[in-house]
Image (tube, rainbow, N blue to C red):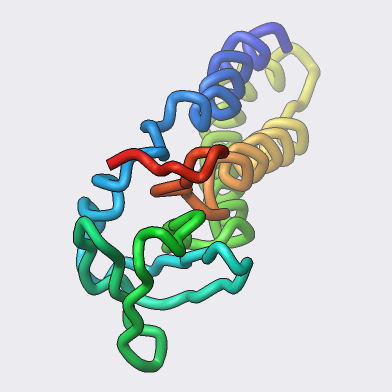
Length: 158
């Protein structure tokens, strides 16, 4: 079981540290770097939220298609976030399937050795691999990614 901790510890460390390595979200230029068609959301200073597809971003505002074209002035934008392409549950399922395949590989290789010595790791390898994969998939994916967030004092960076 020591080999599991040697493998999973660095993976989990990276998964939990990844958000801390994200880009500076106080820069309005991040909004201008979005691609047309990206699924985004905007939280305005009156706390109203708008979800839609990004069309364009300028120095003065952001335009998106939310059933109709809407332009929100920069001074009214508190936060812009990108919505995930694949949901968190779906990433968990994909990770679980990958982990199941990894468990099958471990069972086929190391499991043969344990079976020769009277032990069997089939269930542990398959369930363990699936569980670890599902957990990593769920933790590392889904959710929203902040693209821009106005500074706490209300003066966003240019």
